[in-house]
Image 1 (tube, rainbow, N blue to C red):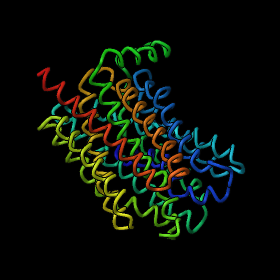
Image 2 (cartoon, rainbow, N blue to C red; image 1 turned 90 degrees about the vertical axis):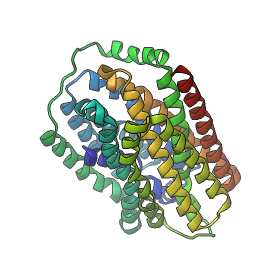
Image 3 (spheres, helix red, strand yellow; image 1 turned 30 degrees about the vertical axis):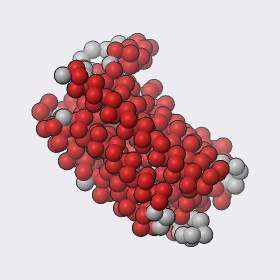
Image 4 (cartoon, helix red, strand yellow; image 1 turned 120 degrees about the horizontal axis):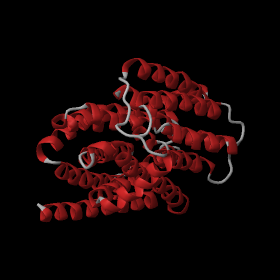
Length: 377
């Protein structure tokens, strides 16, 4: 399940180290930024429209079908001959890739409550590895074979993941069924009824916004005369960020023992520090240090937030994940758009200020949530 999560979520990050090459192929204003943004928007739409289906249909079959959809969307991107066709394929690919988030709540269902944090952390380490190493793989393939070759490679990966899940997962049907419209309507009720869910979603949205802000602009930053580095080097930053992946299982165990709020507070503070490093240390070394800190901060907060929300309603895990992850990826889309605008108008200093401000908002939101939780206790 960890492996499948990684191969699924990788699809929304393959394009990031290739954005410079995509911009050269489609030199219309903002196309490269729109590719990254629409992939994130597609993911957010898929989370809202597709993820609740886990509480409606048999989970294993749903996961297999979505992996096949990933393969079809990847094929569309590989065959794209115009900017519009690439943008449409990017939107569809983002929506289909939400299969990763069908798997994560399934883990929470199968795990014992006392080990939920550790189980989620382990599977999230696979998901985070997919996020980071997807850039490394895409950078290497694009540098040597062209950016469309990466989407060709993604097709058999998705089909192999579908076969893996068909063979390995147990069948699981929801305890009760309801109409799709009622299912979607219940999402709004969850949002209104659960202040913990609202605060967790907003905090993680701000963290993910500052995360996507960095990765959306990285390839463009490295192409500047100060660096003269290509997509292969941009992809290698995923290997550097893998240091944060190693902390995901640890974050889950810490959340089991100490409670998630302490770990989330640590994550937001480290994200603020990361953007401080990006802003003042203008070198490859500074970017390496910053990306280690940023990935660590964002990922440990994510694992702890999921530990927190999955304990709210055991029977609503897919819908809780829908609300949380949709909010988070809307934040990611905002981060991509804001970073693109900041880059066009103020260059890297503008991106650093934008990303840093998002991290500060996340930290302030988390400290407020921590005080409210302490007061309620």
